[in-house]
Length: 190
Image (cartoon, rainbow, N blue to C red; front, top):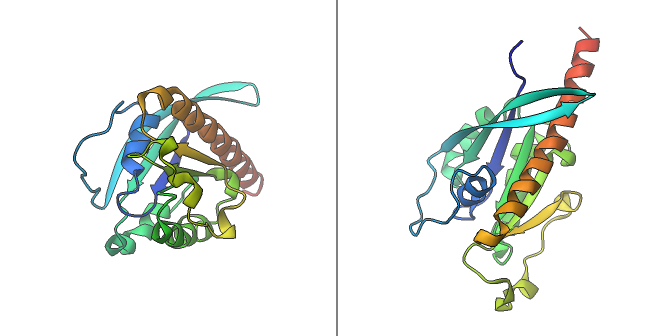
């Protein structure tokens, strides 16, 4: 029997730190690159996630779609969100435009594919900032669409790699549980 698969999208505005976050979370890279290289239009990462569901151990094949933040690729979003199981939003919390733009991403990667907030994660990316720099008090306000989505802060520092990896694994576990429930319901109605 082939391993079960799931699809995760990593979305958000341009230069918000999407690729950096997913590189840290999947251990693809453990430090930032000095130069910004935009994703055009998507980078797909394959990742294996071990899981125990209902006493059964199995490994899930996770296809992570690291999507460009450039809205000129919006015409590709329906394909990227097709059969989507989870969404990770990455944004700069100090950028008001990023906070406003997240609504567009929410519409295309949560509402249209009919995901639940349980299958979402919000990442406030402060990749070039220290937490003590005083900017954290001036965060842009997010819409209420994001009020039920778990939120973490990502600074891209080596000492937070383990926390980021564990948060990512916990997120995947939640998505696996929700995906398994959906598959079981689908099988009952066949």
